[in-house]
Length: 132
Image (tube, rainbow, N blue to C red; front, side, top):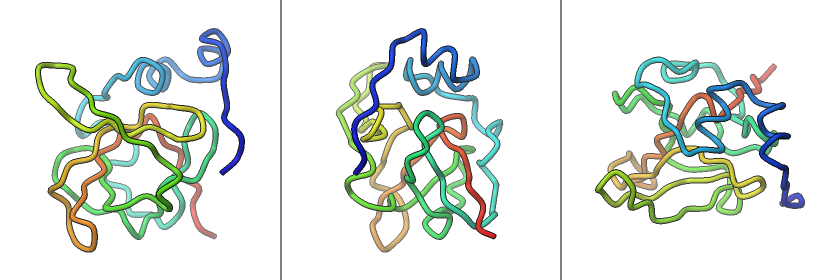
């Protein structure tokens, strides 16, 4: 993995759109069925919108019916980190980019084979690099 990326709040604000900043730096959530990638089926690699680290491949993406892009596994175990999120009166597992600590979404144990995981992510935290 590449070196950790650390920026000031002002640097992140200058680099990201308002929604990207809210989601990735303030742990926000975009409304269901509104994100660019919730129903995208284009082949490619999903990168972190903050640092361009490759996170997920389109082959692991599936339609969860939730309104957010969902994947059964990241590209590698080192690309994302997970943490207990006890906000909003519930306990969930938050997923972050391991390189820049951007909030991506949450992972749930109700996904398809082979992992049984559903990485439920915000489109605003991702950028699709389409295959040629």
